[in-house]
Length: 193
Image 1 (cartoon, rainbow, N blue to C red):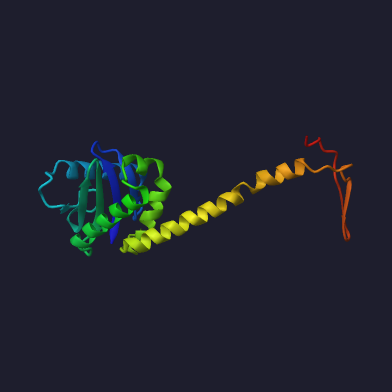
Image 2 (tube, rainbow, N blue to C red; image 1 turned 120 degrees about the horizontal axis):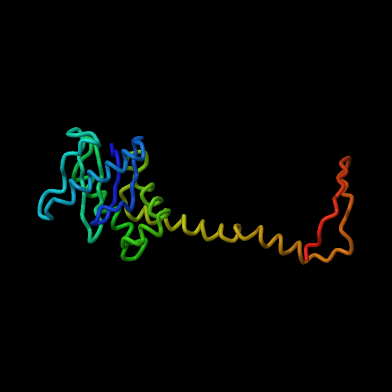
């Protein structure tokens, strides 16, 4: 099971943190710092697997990471996960980000955090791997983008309704409204114009 997914830059600034086990915010920050120190001082030509730090579970857990340009992608997993499978998952995650953002960079992770979280949730949910097929993930993201665009028209509906009410030319504002047995008295309202 995946315990945490961390993405941080070469200076240790977290750009994405997703924990699948409950930790206090202070403990999460300590885990990110310890993980950065463990991963960042390793040479580029050594293995991408190492034992987890003391905070994340010690020798029962592994840190599996990849370093791309200015970002480290680190998955903290228990002993039941395959190291090569997680490395492949990291590759799929990065390629999916690259496809969605067209040459993904650190700023995309900062300014489009909601989209990055959505991509990650399509792949991993509750610490379990859901999908590794990049084409399937991308098609789900495109469907989400279409839905967001169609809802953009709905988001503007209240403003259009107010504008329409303002443009109604009523000779007189109704004071009594009757619906069957119900009678409503409308108070004196200020003019809309």
